[in-house]
Image (cartoon, rainbow over all chains, first blue to last red; front, side, top):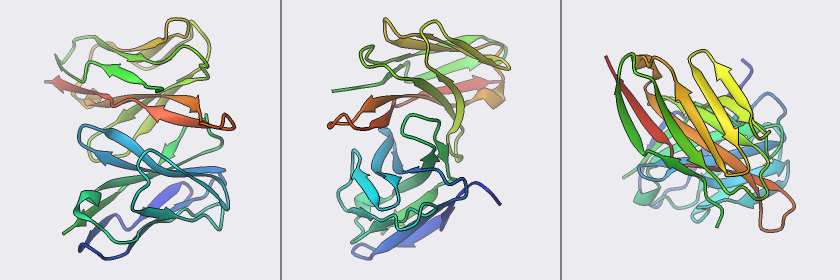
Length: 112
Length: 116
């Protein structure tokens, strides 16, 4: 189906493990984004990408790594998960940096 | 610091009440103002994008206005229903530090609860 999807939808991992969250969009949008949802902070931008092979830090990038080898995919990796990274992660895409962003369904990550 | 502020933080209304809440943003370098609706356990969905001073947009019982000169937008809900319960986010693009691109900056949202 067309749209933006995230996988897995739920993940439980342990402190220190590496975790990769996947995001895939079928619109050929140039821009893709990763946010985390935290109580009291709303949506906070982790990383974004303007095009394949172009990524930039957002508000809270520490502890995360991204790559964008293909336009349609934007994986987010937690290199060594910490409990503070327990959150709901949303991926989004848009045609350009000022246009409407379309959000994926979210991944709920728990780090024990 | 470029901030998008929303008020109130939360709001409880009775079914049938009309309500409104505010988004304020820096009026300099204004490009656009977005409103999103975010239901619990779902993902944010776009409601409106507004760009011109004096813009008004409407979608069913929900409408929004924009004042770019004073830096605010109002979201109105007429005759609130329980299904309107959600967090309403506004966002505005701001240029990044190099000025070469824009980043959409979100407010923290207004949580609306409509009691039956």
